[in-house]
Length: 59
Image (tube, rainbow, N blue to C red; front, side, top):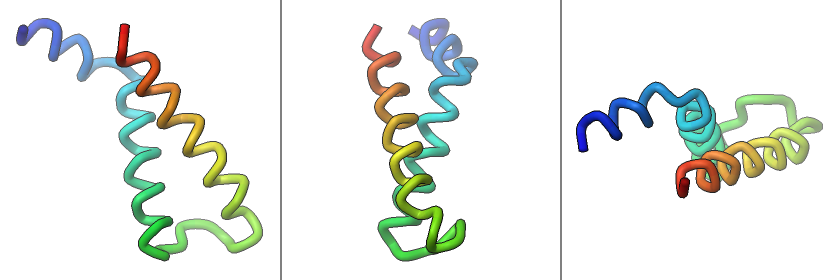
């Protein structure tokens, strides 16, 4: 069990998905990390990154 967890913690996909999730939560709390004009583009990219991590995590 620990070996499987260690393998997942080394996964770059997991960390990208986690960072994206944190940024999405900050965005939902109205903490602006980027300029207003880029918010929709960044939000879309973050959703895709989170979903990619979730889909990859199901393997």
